Image (tube, each protein chain N blue to C red):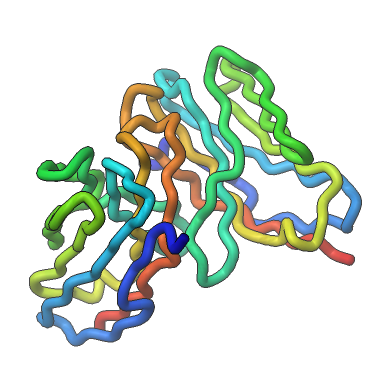
Length: 112
Length: 114
């Protein structure tokens, strides 16, 4: 049973607007969360992460928000650019463990 | 700086054939991983190697074996390929095996088993 779920398989957004990607998890023991970005025919690349001791982490245009009580995290991309068109994977783990549980991914398309 | 290199990029096998997927990293990382990605599912860990000389099973190890040849190289072997092993396989590495050290991925091997 998947412990990390990305319920929106796809998202289309206009260039310059905000993209919001959502991720839910079921294991309350998870305490470290990551987002990876993947272009076609390439491997995933690390984008941003957050520890459960925080509720927000920001890196340039990318911000991840964590709501532990709801077991929910989101990735905000502001402003969205054409190069952001990719598949985004949410992953969760215990911070002292190697094992990442991945969501199925959300395909983002940024329209000009 | 190549990062993580996987060979081959594509392969078609017949059921029952054997195959070794190669992976090498040039970042002096200690930990290496093999994942598979199937449609509608996230990446699932097949095997991992925390450090040179050690390997351990991940979430979906059945039908696979691995070898950590040295610090740089980590290979995945399918002894008798089955159609259910049709997938995209990714190798990854990280400095150590803790999740707060991001994993770096290769570009994948697309494997089809007929």
